[in-house]
Length: 490
Ligand SMILES: Cc1cc2nc3c(=O)[nH]c(=O)nc-3n(C[C@H](O)[C@H](O)[C@H](O)COP(=O)(O)OP(=O)(O)OC[C@H]3O[C@@H](n4cnc5c(N)ncnc54)[C@H](O)[C@@H]3O)c2cc1C
Ligand code: SF4
Image 1 (cartoon, helix red, strand yellow):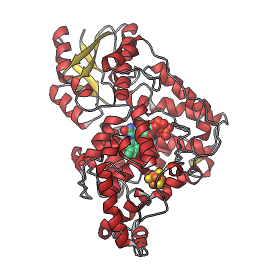
Image 2 (cartoon, protein in one colour; image 1 turned 180 degrees about the vertical axis):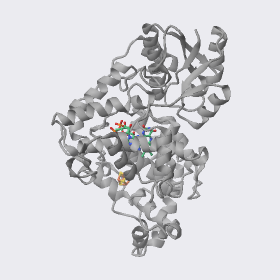
Image 3 (cartoon, helix red, strand yellow; image 1 turned 90 degrees about the vertical axis):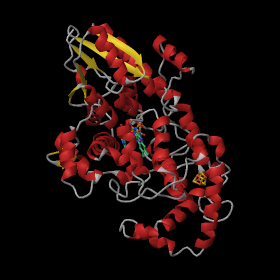
């Protein structure tokens, strides 16, 4: 044996990363289950189950292919690699460039040789070249370039369907009396049950832990959900937890699926005439646009970007984020309960409920980020840091997004059925029945009006403050709401 091929928990694909060129006759594969990763924080069990079981299944498939595989449990990744080095008397460790600044630095210091990370469609240097040439990092500009560069949904140099963006058609509220397709359940095997036992939990059937299962999820999306994905993309409903979302992020992020495979199946279905353009474009935008952009920005921005707190938000994490019984806000109670059940909600609850609440309550961005990292099935540093710090809570002062995603109850009421079962009224901003989102939205604008007035995309919203004759009363109510949220009584 000549080399150790180190496969992190998020590089689980035989045809990409360091495994692409690996040879069972000369390479030992090392997979390290580090205590730092499993017990270091208050991780959601569903998340640990998914990550560990996927890695153990992957190790098994490599063994079946003839590889010598060392699946090591160790305090840290480096400790685990040392064990494998000693056992085989090999120093040479290769790995695809890791997905976080921290792991990159640790492995580099340990002397690991890197091959380029090809788990994304955009090489890191190419993104850096684009970002380095921009005045503002508009995702839309990057996305159009991706469409052209990758030749996806393009007709003779023009966007298919005559437009780059069909967002206007993709903002429908949740439908009433709608027949949702059944959820895909993932059967469990001995490896799953063993992992669940170690974690002291009952194995659920929500998330696949094998490539076969991930491919089945992709098929299920293409056949049963893709056509309706676009129009209902932003809707939220208590009738169905997944709506028409693909549920593919965990597999894209741990390597069980590659973006190339997902896009190829999507375009095949579109070319067969089964998918309306607004759904196809909406989905393609997520995969070749948002996902690539977020990863590119993570690597383009400095490692200390995660520490940004440019709105000076100092409130401690509210109890309702960890315990849904600590709130009477129906939208938040439902969302946090859904996260407790399956470690997932789609992008609108993440952005317009959870992040919006953290933003307008002035919650400390790093405390909120740490919580989001711990509870989501698909969370990793590269994806959570830009999404939370940049997009969710505007803690970077607008480096990524030109304006904060702050909204009151009217938006939530329009896009969901949460408000019907709520003690509060989304239309009211003062008084005991006022929706906390509505009250705090105006309070947030008022607190930051000087700095937002300079932002032309915010000036209209700030101007709206002048029309509020009840602003003094609203400010008093906002203080009551904030202390009620801290005490877990609102
Ligand atoms: C505050 C916040 C935090 C988020 N944290 C994560 C995270 O930790 N991990 C994660 O994978 N996604 C994250 N997202 C993006 C998005 O919410 C999830 O990718 C999506 O909900 C996953 O479900 P899905 O696979 O059904 O997605 P779909 O709605 O079916 O979308 C398809 C795919 O597009 C990609 N995608 C879409 N938007 C983004 C985005 N903003 N960033 C990265 N990929 C995107 C994902 O790979 C997703 O699987 C976050 C978004 C917000 C606003
Ligand atoms: S009224 Fe306000 S708190 Fe209640 S569900 Fe609607 S948006 Fe959420």
